Length: 161
Image (tube, rainbow, N blue to C red):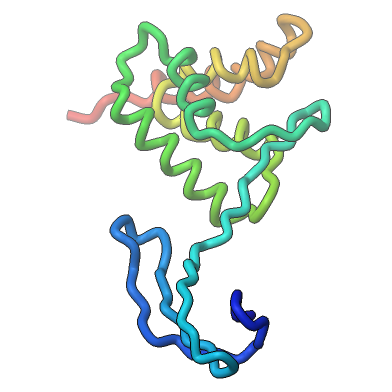
């Protein structure tokens, strides 16, 4: 650290204290060149996470956007807001673990669809229809096929007594 008074690059830390919010550290330093004291603040350099859109644009990541999309998909469905918030947090944590600076929307969309498929199939289909931008009914039907087969298998299994 260069001394602000004499420009020497040789000092020692006399005292260190965390700030009240814990986001930075205040350090009192003493210059070996001029023996004057000065204060520096150290904080984490935050690198904002950016989302790479389908068209190549980059926008700041915002967990609220995930929550808004899931909320619209779950409208008039028996899914609590607390559950959706927990899912959004889980997706955000997964994103931060796997990506440093940029995350493609494809990854986010696939994560949301995976979670919604487990929570509510109607919400999943709603979200998928917007996210996948189906061109016609056959694409929509192809998306439904696995769920229809699953429900057919469940109906064919006889209940045990």
